[in-house]
Length: 227
Image 1 (cartoon, one colour):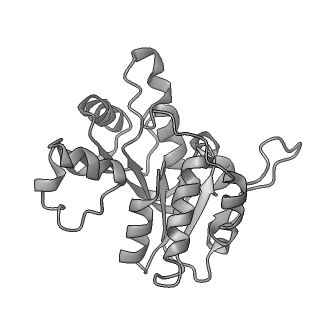
Image 2: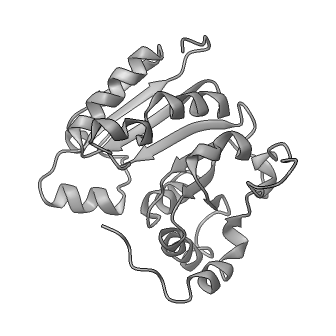
Image 3: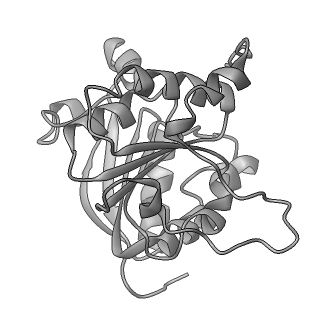
């Protein structure tokens, strides 16, 4: 379902500028190399990146629960990112200064992050794009996995949650084709060993409230290229 355009969205985003990373212009004649993402934080820490942060429940919760890490929440749709930014701003005086937001497309990851700069990457309830002709839009398609492998440190970790069993099974197939090592997988996260420390997204809270089981997988990229 398409989100209704936010009234005064640009102004509301501008009011959250202290938490917003400004990406380089995609149309620049000579694009600059990606900046060190640690420059966006007051203290260098292991970097965790969520792609498709939605309204920000997961990113805000994880940043508060793990102050020993820096967190970047990336969202393609500005009107959705606006809500996440405002949520984080309301809590900025009660949580560590370790969370930033980035409005942009995951296809630009290699322009935005230096190779090996991210420690852990999260995909939470990504659009499943169920039609076979739309497979290349799935965030676990090989085109995206190559980008993740590039920006993650060697042996970096990808963590995924979804309510869509078709996307889950497809993703496991792609991870295997990439020679990734699965460290954890379940088709019922909320009754697994990781239920207690799981921070839910807004979608997850809705789905689980309807009795929908949540699938999750943690997979680590190897050091050798297989694709």
